[in-house]
Amino acid sequence: MPSPTLLAKKISKSPTIAMNDKAKQLAAEGKSVIGLAGGEPDFDTPPHIVEAAIKALRDGETRYAAPSKGIRPLLEAIAAKTERDNDVRVDPMTDIIVTPGGKLALFLALKAMLDPGDEVLIPAPYWVSYPSITTMVGGAPVTIETSSADNYRLDLDHMKAFVTPKTKAIIINSPCNPTGHMLSSAEIEAVATLALENDLYIISDDIYEKLNFDGRPAVSLASIPEIADRVVVINGMSKAYAMTGWRLGWLAGPTSLISVAGMFNSQTSTSAATFTQHAAVAALTGPQDCVEEMRKSYEERRDFMVSAFNSIPNMSSPNIEGAFYAFPKVNETSKTSDEVANIILDEAVVVGVPGSAFGVSKDAHIRFSFAEDLGKLKEAVERIRRIADKLA
Ligand code: PMP
Ligand code: GLU
Image (cartoon, rainbow, N blue to C red; front, side, top):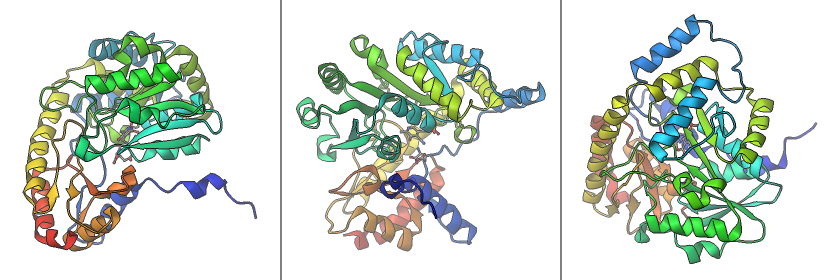
């Protein structure tokens, strides 16, 4: 009997997806569960985007997309968006690949840059899929832990200590899933210096760039001229346009790397769905007030989540600068984040994701998505408040 790859032993199902599935299963069993595990907007996709997809289907846009790297109007819309938002010029025909979701864009970017054993620096807390995808493509993830006490700051000397002759890339996600942290200009400079001194690629995962709070814009690393030729941007429609189920993302970067990623895309996905690409054109070129309305709503919920967790005895949350996750900490506890998440699940019937999934080894953090109705968030926090003494 043949057996699957040995890599399978190093990877588990995405914990965010596993916990989200668990919440859905408990709801199907009739439990009054509040699922805050998945990072998915509660809003419906704006109607003009849905209409564009329906029109594309009616117009017969049901075949493989050509070119496989993305239909020309979408490549041009992404290039225009990149210039408008990030002040970066990319050639639509050579520097962008459209993929079925940002997650696959990340997979293709890493597959295109790594040889077996090449190392990738991943600051933690990190999005759960970074180490797993790195491992899946034959690379070696190297975690750089940062601390909540230091506002998750990236320090050049600290990062340098993790560089070896095998280091090939660093992954940056700002605003960050799960902390919301946005890189300061000093941190951007530190990442740029590290990459230049050690000849590294920088993966700039900009998927939450539109979900920034307190009027502070998110800066894409691609917009820094000195490093622009080594930055590969990951982005997509899921978060800003409430289009998670449409599976539409992209990567953009140096032509040499993008041409390899495009080759791999043509050999795996063939292309992102054609009618979805037409909908993405409508999203990127149409009115943007829907994005701002959703952002404002996340900001209100952010205000609530930060003050609510700081009002629960023995829990705390720093300010959340972007994205739509709270990542509070249980202050004085002998329990691990997995134990804390299980108690909250069993006793409060609220589903979050333990900090361990995001590479946090020391403190007991738990991630709750606030891309959920405010009424449900209030109920979730009250339930946690009632059982908070059990978390110590
Ligand atoms: N990057 C980060 C940090 C994310 O949280 C997600 C959410 N799944 C993605 C990339 C990819 O999103 P998608 O595949 O839905 O485009
Ligand atoms: N990015 C979201 C999250 O972190 C969606 C699930 C996933 O792809 O991990 O929950």
